Length: 174
Ligand code: 5GP
Ligand code: MG
Image (cartoon, rainbow, N blue to C red; front, side, top):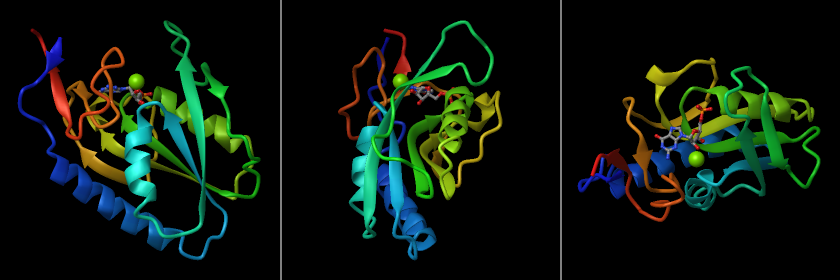
């Protein structure tokens, strides 16, 4: 497999979506002094670093890592081997993800973080593939909705490759 020669989503289109999301988030959290961005490793890091630099509010950044047990289909069977360092209790928590697909991992992440008793818990994703959804997930901030294609670039990998590309590509047979 290799990436398509032409991008599916150009850098300018990604950056416009990031700017719009930053404005929405800035408006929503403008009176909040305890915003904690929880970035889901590894795919969310590129998106989050662009996004947070366009939010001129005081905020803290935490990272989590999610691993799902392969072959087990039930919700909640997701390990979080990297957890936030600071307590989330009473904080306004915003989860940053690269892409929303089946919703399995993301809903398990939201469920686990909710057990930390945050004051509020919202989700921001750069990409959404709604046609793939198996588990319902509420994302308050969505960058770009796409068809059911496997995409790489701008944080998204295939076997750890392509994360550094500034555009988003589809994956194709060689
Ligand atoms: P979900 O729990 O929504 O099925 O899974 C979301 C995770 O699956 C994402 O955080 C991402 O790691 C991975 N994923 C889903 N779709 C894609 C895709 O099109 N490309 C890449 N590179 N990863 C994807
Ligand atoms: Mg991944």
